[in-house]
Image (cartoon, rainbow, N blue to C red; front, side, top):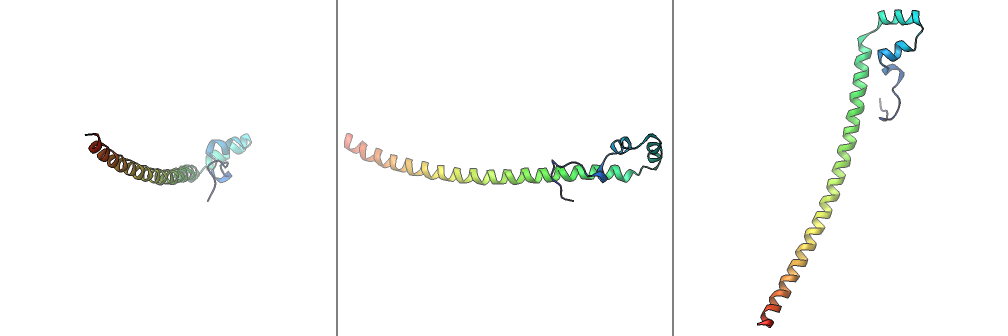
Length: 99
């Protein structure tokens, strides 16, 4: 069952209270007696499935962000290395002429 986290809960995943509230009073009593706990388990299972999907999406986003930051970090390291190597060369030639 692939539903987005924003989609409404399918009718077969409704909680016991929602199901009973949709019935007339006499049907509510009969349904209350015939309620199967597997429905409650399906509701919990659906909620866990949705939270798992959300966590997977968040994990994927974090992986993408980490890769982007690693690329930026490597560019910054290269820049620093080039900048400091050229700065050291300029200082070494400048010191000998200043003496």
